[in-house]
Image (cartoon, rainbow over all chains, first blue to last red; front, side, top):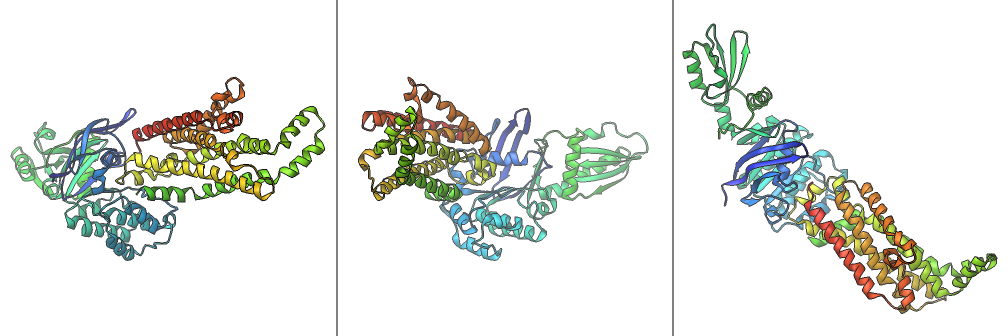
Length: 307
Length: 250
């Protein structure tokens, strides 16, 4: 069994003059719950479509569960499930017919699990999919995705537009049925609070570039801000010090975003004449926004390999 | 899995298929049932020389049925329904954005294409076959029977030609995201394919001429080489459409 559920090397995808994904090198450890973050248009959906074989790369390669990804990778899709943002299913089929349709493709379909979750979510089996609410459709898509016991579950912003109750149900099922079995979940989302709750590893993508990929624990312990004052002789090369990701001047003080080694950096700032160096914690949303703004200001334009 | 794909296609097109079967059977049974009425009407109004010629054809019941069904209604309805059934083959999945749902399942595109093409093709062929059976039964019922064995000879050319038309439409359905656009472009191409049938020396090159059974009528038997050639063209179009579908991104 491969160490990596997903691996990409130099993965690039262009559409005409627009390059949606640029030289993406990504490794997703088997058994992890991986949060794939980025603003709209970052290239998340394109990356996911490359992984599930709906698109072909312009350059580079991708592997899922150790096998090359692509439209021809039919056999490996027995072990991979995918839930798209829109959950477009056949509106004219009933829930029961949709289940039967999907069941026909898989060799290890779990009927008992499907029955259990259809009952739990109170999904009406005789109702046409087109008459289900958005929340019900999402939950049905999730049931269909987990029924074949996938080793890799790929979710593309699945909870967008869901109310908090449905969102909680969705995430609970992922944690209970997929993660507990040692399967890998690759999860793209806008909703950082839910990512923060469930993932153990995070990658941030923006404008097609991978900005960072590291464990959530490491991110929270290493990604900090340091507030410091310099009355005179401010180091001119502060932005280029090791570990410094972004420097924002606030009056006579500076707010420095740090990617690693905050204590060491605070000590160095003090030694360089800075006063009142204070290390501030950042939550995932602040880290995310900091990376995106750093890239927008040109400070970060490629992956910083910190994993 | 393959049967489930076909079942899904049948359910997806249930309204169109119902209309197709109903119309093709209805038009077929009307041919023998309306013969006496139309003949009397023609006899009562044929004053011009050309009307007299038409009346001579009309008086030959066997020829009348052949020309009315294979020579007109059969291939025309087959053409219309080949467009209606084929234009959404791939394009409707793309338009409804259900292609992601389908192609991320462990199924290869060849199987998907085969399921869709075969369902449409068999529906088209079943409708045409049923219509011929209905016509012959209606002829028996109306007291003006024709020889089944003779009339059946028109069917192979009609079926083979309809497979060619479906192949053309399916190819454009694989090329375009919008089923209406696919249908319009395919219709334009089918119109172009009809040009040889307007030119007497070239009409044998027209798929419609072969579908209309003129060569069968002339030879007195099924022109198997032509039928096999049409089936070969249909198979080539099937392969071409599959190649387009396999290269596409969604």
